[in-house]
Image (tube, one colour):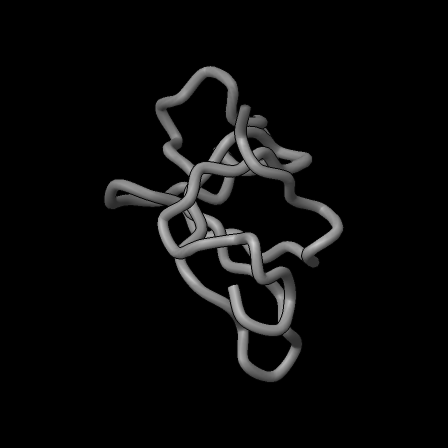
Length: 71
């Protein structure tokens, strides 16, 4: 992903403090990485699931040091 971490790619599966997700982009002003989480995935934290209102995915922002490639 450009400036934040050149090894991170769009739609790459990553681990975050709140569970697994997919990179969706990067916030231009802050550089935070936007990650989507599946609210039906049992590995996703309840903190994230509380933000789920409707739809399919939950978007959450993280700093680059908060995410790691999924292995």
